[in-house]
Image (tube, rainbow, N blue to C red; front, side):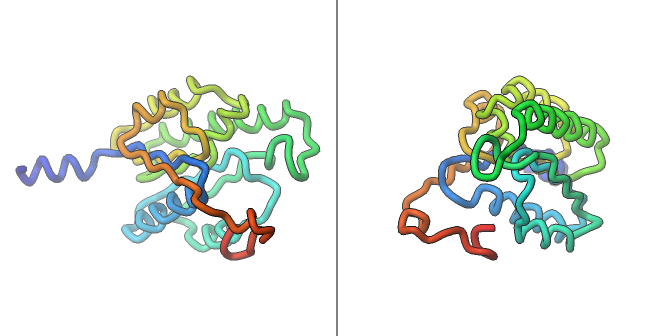
Amino acid sequence: MTESQAQSRETQGLVLVHTGDGKGKTTAALGTVLRAVGYGHRVLIVQFIKGSWVYGEMKAIRRLEPEVEFHRMGKGFVGILDDNLPREEHEKAAREALQFAKERLASGDYHLVLLDEIFVAISLNLITIQDALGVLDARPSQCNLILTGRGAPQEIIDRADTVTEMKEIKHAYQRGILAQKGVDY
């Protein structure tokens, strides 16, 4: 491989998918965010579902500003736990998050964009697979894009460069242990 070919491969943006029923999808994506920040790259994070709870990673991400922009656009978990919102509000929030992500992607200002829990928004029919594919189409070729969430659609898996499935083997919750601050959230 020539030096120019190696350099060209290095500047080509990738589409990465973190999916599956196991824990660690967002955590893995945030590891990539840390790598990008380590090189001084600009990062955009858009969260589609997590909205009303406070997570340790949110506090840590704020420490990475200005390289990292974090936008929590979801209205929280849909139809479970403490959700009292009409479904229409969740749908509107997901559409707005999608439009926001497309506009920011089009700016070309980011080395890495993370769309956290976008697959959950799709599986809940808050947005469509076609909507998500439109984001892939809007991505500048040099921008890396990470999409996370359970149930990645096959159409997106087919278009991705790297796909990782997190598989649950065992979970502390099955033994009655609730989520732990600093480990699970």
